[in-house]
Length: 118
Image 1 (cartoon, rainbow, N blue to C red):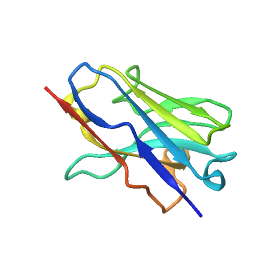
Image 2 (cartoon, helix red, strand yellow):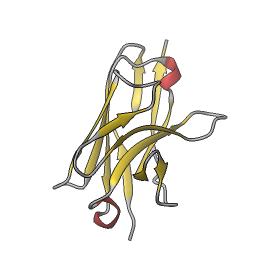
Image 3 (tube, rainbow, N blue to C red):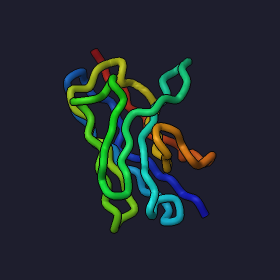
């Protein structure tokens, strides 16, 4: 059974930080690259950050230098440390297995809401 559980969102002022977590089922997580996506109201879901099974990381231009993705393979968990948050980072954040900058699973969790106030 595929499971994705995002957590850690909340309301933060601009310039603040949050750390998101995503617990994934082993079938989806093991030996797969994992990524974070976000969807703001009225916009399409977009890629934010990715990490390969061996730890290579890459980011969208909009978050590079502010966000950091990491993973704990023993816990089937991927994290997103978000610093210097901006109001335009407000969105629902999701994780998924990825290839490149696209999700490889059609299953999405409920996501976690991040709201950045100005």
